[in-house]
View 1 (cartoon, rainbow, N blue to C red):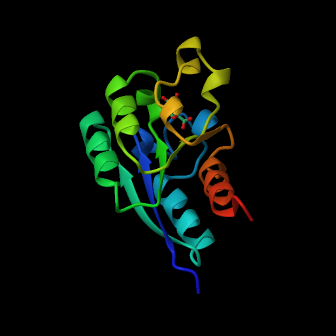
View 2 (view 1 turned 90 degrees about the horizontal axis):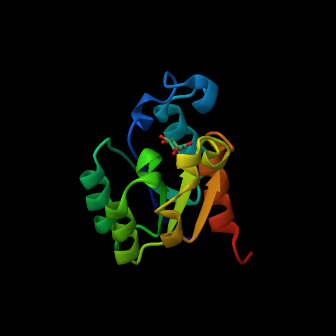
View 3 (view 1 turned 135 degrees about the horizontal axis):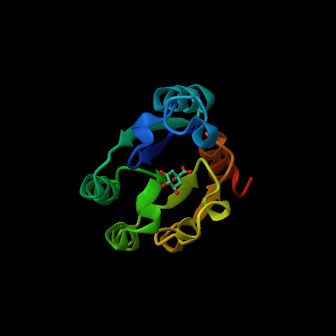
Length: 146
Ligand code: DQA
């Protein structure tokens, strides 16, 4: 059997409120639902570690710590996508491959959300598929080359 890939799922500010936060944009499912769905769906292939923080520095610490411990990071930097040079610097500094994930499609929202400071340092980005964005990102990464 193939060894399981170690995937860290890192969610940024306000994503702990999924399910109740602006459900017309982010849906009714919770962060726990997302974590359970991913675990179930990829049970054969992936060993997950889930992180969520509302604090920029904590997200940076986790990204730095992913080196040598994670094969992939799925990162939803939430609003820090559009504001955080520090998070962008952390991504530039690490060797762990990172995919940027968004639940909504920020490009179709306010102008401010069209800019991603973090995406240039990620291997790929996916947005706009609701919670399935995480699943699609991971499926694409696992299936590449096959
Ligand atoms: C988000 C999009 C961001 O613009 C926003 O600040 C979020 C969530 C998304 O997943 O759609 O908090 O990253």
